[in-house]
Length: 225
Image (cartoon, rainbow, N blue to C red; front, side, top):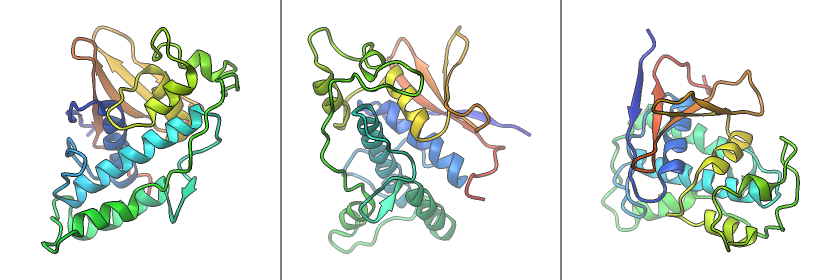
């Protein structure tokens, strides 16, 4: 039996990337990390992996916009996002998502720092490079940039926590993760995909609140087996 539910995520300016993280973690591991926790306030291993995956996705999207050919297997430091998903599945299976950190001073901070991406310097071009759909990154980003904002400034802003993501970031995320399907009230779902045969991650956009949440499909077999 297919069970579909909406998982609310924190409305802290990271909601698109939180929604993609929550839906992707479920797709790869079979576990739901929930709404997430404030950055730096993680209480459980579920909170930690949620925020770390969110940071990975945001950084990869920014670097892909900047013209770098990155994906879920790109290694920055010891890990790639794919390896983080594998590590998350191992931890969740052994300890559960609600396992709290040891009381030892700095335990949470050290754990989060260990699995966070060692992001290389971001050097965006002028946006003229072509994306797989045949249009430039400059065109893709046009809906998210303010009137006087340059492409370089836009990409650097997107790379920072608490910066809102939108349609352009959904498309770029589909080049990195899996197809991304966006649902909205009274509208047909919009699917961004570079491979139509792959299972999409799904998010819900609320036009009134300008907020994204994750859509979770519980019948799907985890991609990591």
